[in-house]
Amino acid sequence: MPFAELLKRHRGRSGLTQQQLADFATLSVRAIRDLESGRVRRPRRESVGLLADALRLGAPERLQLHAAGGSPADHRPALCELPAPPAPPGALVGREAELQVLLDQVTVHGHRLVSVVGISGIGKTHLVLEAAEVLRARGWRVGWHSSAGDPLSCGGPPAADPGSGGPPARATEVTDDLAAAIGERHQLLVIDGDDAPGPGRVDVGALLRRCPGLRVVVTGLAPRHLPGERVLPLTAMAVPQEAREYDYARLSEVASVALFLSHMRRSRPGFRLREDNAHAVVRLCRWLDGVPRALEYAAGWCLVYSPELLLARAGRDSRLLSSPTGCACQNLLRSLARSVDAVGERYRQVLAEVADRPSWTAADIDHLVPDPAAALHALVIHGLVRPAGAHLPEQFTALQLVRLLYVEDRPAGGGPGR
Ligand SMILES: Nc1ncnc2c1ncn2[C@@H]1O[C@H](COP(=O)(O)OP(=O)(O)O)[C@@H](O)[C@H]1O
Ligand SMILES: [Mg+2]
Image (tube, rainbow, N blue to C red; front, side, top):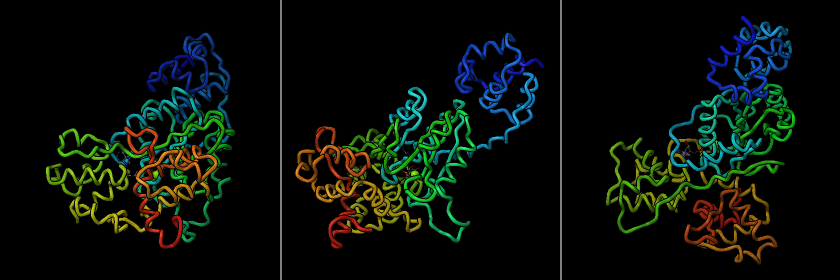
């Protein structure tokens, strides 16, 4: 079969337009047109390789395409496929705006590195999995690398268990392996669970330099501070306003309430918002700052306590902020402490000073640091501090969980210890 026919057939099967194929293969549309019309009969071997990559051809079809184009197949060792991302763990509640921004950063604006940052349990992994799924459906080649084992189970750092499967891979080895697998391909790599520095942390800067067609979305507690990096800080989900009476239908559409209810219904299928529980659910969602993992755990404990009782107890008993069923590493306060660790020492002192106050402004921390705005920015980016409310634009407040962290550690002196 002539090259032109074969190419058209493969493109037809892939559902790509000429423009899309050109984009994925980094060729011009004109080149695709010339090939498909038969004006160019003997394309360069590299171009055929790029087309085969973009069309995701398997080995036999790739050889056939090369043969039709009159060029011997490339005998470099075949690049291996990176694992594809797992499916998202369930429907994404809210976060429409964040998802759109993330997709736009990668596709429309063509940024090569987007960091999704925030505290553990805020929903970074879930969001990037959703984005990966959308992009895969649009024909993108998406690879997945997780250095934290199962990305969806645990908020803890990678298990440092030398007994299981030899020494941990070093960062350079992991980076080398990824670079070798990706080569010059055009693809997106999602790197998840890369919070903790140390073994296994991918050198994203080196990877981007070595793989010119690569784009990376990485999740972490903090930005990587690399050139060209775009940062998407993930803050808590929307929480409801307190009121004397509620419209239950509208209330259950507020993202944090919707998420809490979806978890509640898993363990108590008949649960509905009613006069006798709506106030407590609202206060619980607010108290937990709309942090998805905290809402999930709270809903789990509601098998034992009513929302009112849980609210009354959780402030005194931090075990109620952990998974009712899970391992000890799934402790929200402990994983939050890693975010506190990730901010600079000076800014940590600011946080210790203001954590207890209901709200404050940049001017209120003037006397604590020479760069109050930078301090505030760092605390917000790390997800430890949030705007106090829509009607108080310049006021900020620490997350309730951060407050609890400081209260818990106060007897030990000063800030949170580990
Ligand atoms: N927008 C959301 N909709 C539904 N569930 C969510 C959402 N965000 C987070 N979750 C759930 O909350 C938990 C923590 O989210 P995860 O993405 O693992 O957080 P992170 O990666 O920031 O630690 C997971 O069970 C996740 O499925
Ligand atoms: Mg995660």
